Image (cartoon, rainbow, N blue to C red; front, side):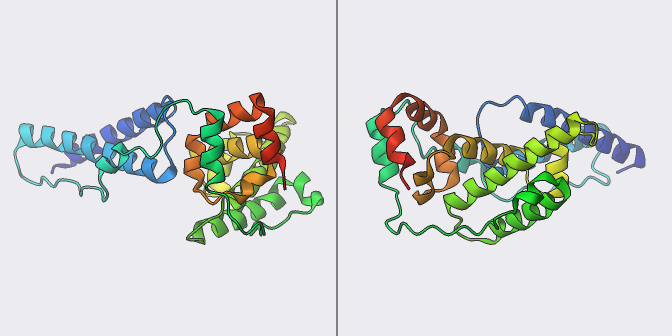
Length: 238
């Protein structure tokens, strides 16, 4: 492939990535981190294939090399574990109770942070880094640990916004948390949102279900916590 062709391919790839980034902010469906990466990998793959086909058509086969197809199948994204319908409070309660862990002992692997460090973003950063690495290394992460980590992210987010308001920081929270913690913007927003909703309801920490499953039921859970006193009181129990 000629240098000019390579240059055009690189320029087009940059444009495509910018377009894909804009598309990510417009989607209403909540994908988990793994599925989002798979979709992005295939976006880049198909787009680069189109560019190379155009080069093949115009200039012939000399120097043409197609990109490597991503691992994983897009078909797996078409399977839905949870039916997309409004659940009644009884259906939701039955579903959640069926996944309660019988052993009520709860142990958090997220280190308790001293209040003096909650006022220092740089000190809090190390706790976030340690906490996120601990989450990634576990094969089976409990929901309680993710909710604890979400609460830690909430503290850091509020501190960041305060410092930005005071002129001590510039930039966005998205850039800060991605650069300093290594967690994706979409995933950390999900953790913060779920922790914000469930903080007054400690019994949710006893659920033995994946975070993604609870996230897909977020709207129903939040609705019934606000509108059904019996449901809310049950999940307030320790």
